[in-house]
Length: 294
Image 1 (cartoon, rainbow, N blue to C red):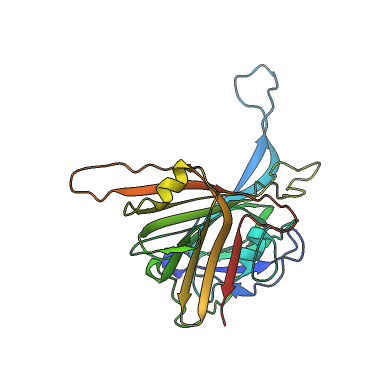
Image 2 (cartoon, rainbow, N blue to C red; image 1 turned 90 degrees about the vertical axis):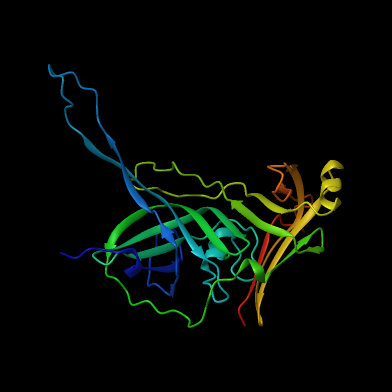
């Protein structure tokens, strides 16, 4: 008996030419976890036929949903940012329609392909002592068995570390940020079937950018900005040698800011929860991602 163990798996990705068009895998992504799942919305009718049993069941629509979490590294495949925001080159920012991915996951005793994978939400995060990670929530068209490929990875391509980050709050560097998170939600439509068994389309809706960061309560700059309800900006730059990765939100507004005293020996930390926005629809973007892998 072959026992499948997680460390023997691998993940291949490809940006599709059109929704669920498939094609050959052209990149490989080290990852931490995945939860892609195929579900059938089967139809069970309430027919009265002189019995207390369920009479008949028919195969219904198919949906594929799930999450993939992976570390972000200097040589990370750019297909994620292209299909998560829309642009095909750095800097990546919102553009419609969004492209789709094909994902191939080998689980040792079997390999599956999920096609027409649309990124519903893409979340970046890191905290002191840890790595930069990206978590993507996916809504897809279909899933099928496939033949596992042979993955190739770039040697020494380690994930970015929180300690390699430079945080800029309204343009000013701040070294006391202990954790951050930024999410771009595409709010995709998930219930378009028509007469198809699988989804006809998974169109992206309104982009909503939210985030948070936690920092040591060591000055009054951000607190005063919160109390005055002023517009700020958020930027984090990860850099290693000549390579870099940047997340930039030019206009944000703080929503909440707890700075609680949890005990007499604890550091006083303040956490800012915020929403990104634009004012000029022709020149501004609520989030931009830049990646320099040269």
